[in-house]
Image 1 (cartoon, rainbow, N blue to C red):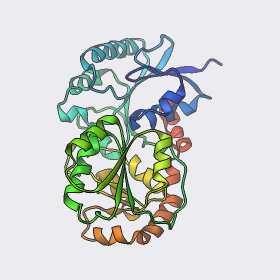
Image 2 (cartoon, helix red, strand yellow):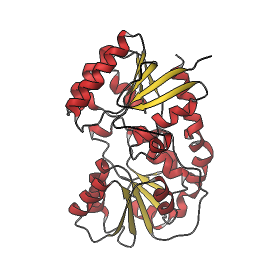
Image 3 (spheres, rainbow, N blue to C red):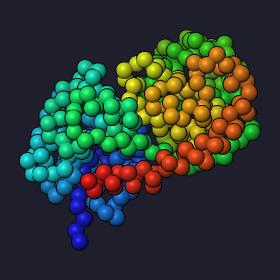
Image 4 (tube, rainbow, N blue to C red):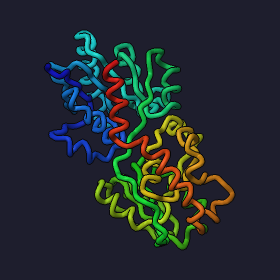
Amino acid sequence: MIKKHIHWLLPGQYNDLKSLEQNLFASIRLRSFVSSLNNNFYTFSFGENMPLNTSILVIGKIGSFDIEKRGVNWLNQIKMAHFSECKIILDYTDNHIMLNNPMTLFYKSILPFITYAVTPSEQMSLILSNFWKGSIYTIQDSIDIGIVKWNDYESKSLLWFGHSTNIQFLLNFLQKYHSKISDYTLKIITNQDGINYFTKNNNTDIHVTTKLWSLDTFINESSTCDICIIPSDKENLKKQGAGHNRLITSLALGFPTIATMLPSYEPFKDYFFDLDSLELSSALTNRKMFKRKVILAQKKIVPLFLPKVISRKWLKVFNI
């Protein structure tokens, strides 16, 4: 039997799955790549142009670069898929419709053509339901690392990882809490824009090292850290529907984790330390108070986000 073909509309070109798996954007790496693990049931392609044999078109994050040209190209292909009776799935990972940014018009224009939508969190599904009344399914981001056992060794190093769009939250954290972490080295893993922005705007005397993100670099650098910090802003509209892959990844690595209580993090509040808590100092100085939380999370929560588990959720949606 000939397999049906799935194409992911994504910025750029991907000649092999390795280039997809190593992509800096979690919304690409942890979603389109993980969905492709269902290659026993479907064939897959990725990039700007949809093959003619496509049965299911998935709309990934379009990005703001060259949005006018790319938006027209993608919209034309979406319309073509719609009139060809392809199934069209919107993978809605950022709250662009509400935020009124360069991508807003594109997302509004494609809503009449999609069959159903997928989001990375229940909160994002709820947000999208205010603008589109079709079927919406939640498929969380997977993690892309294995589970690392708790390590009692202490190196006085903090880990922060993420995209450059989250750097401002880190800078805000350093401004507010620099006296509490003055004994630590902060290790930052991000993209070049993130490194540049941090270097230009950091005015604290915290000892910092920066590395460009890659999966290997992330794994190597994280092995030398004690605690992971994930500062954010729960009042920020951009973060209202954010997924929880950074939190789950941190717990998978065996890290005591200090994070802002975003809506998508609340279901896991028993496994990490709320950054806004008045007990932040004791959490930083006594990492072993996290040990039970981390071990329990690795047993009960982290396995739910392994790629093979999340890929089965994608398969279920593809088969609807």
